[in-house]
Image (cartoon, rainbow, N blue to C red):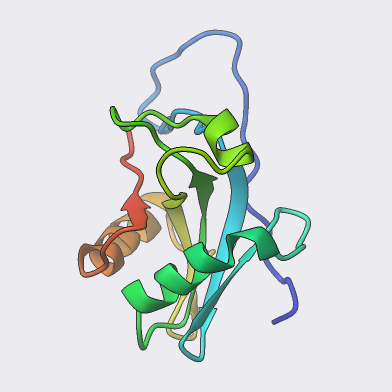
Length: 143
């Protein structure tokens, strides 16, 4: 699949704020990635569109978790410690728990481009999709 999608860029703010028109998500300590799932197989691509070949086992696990789904999911490849906290060094050096994929946006699903939908609606659809999935896919909660 040619890369037609880009992960949503993060917006860094100097100070916390409260605005009903905005949501916030904590910065995960990992590699930003798109999970492209089609024809029963998943591929993890960097934000520049390069395959994450070193995470092929994770991509295979994602495929197994979402059979019969065609989707593009924006998320972060992480390694978490026993408390569930992302540990970038463990990810880099392949120590500790196997990597997982924190999903925070659903860009397409089963042939439908969702990018023009409201972000909160896409997140709700992502949550429904991942409700039937198992590890290593994790839904990232909205705050």
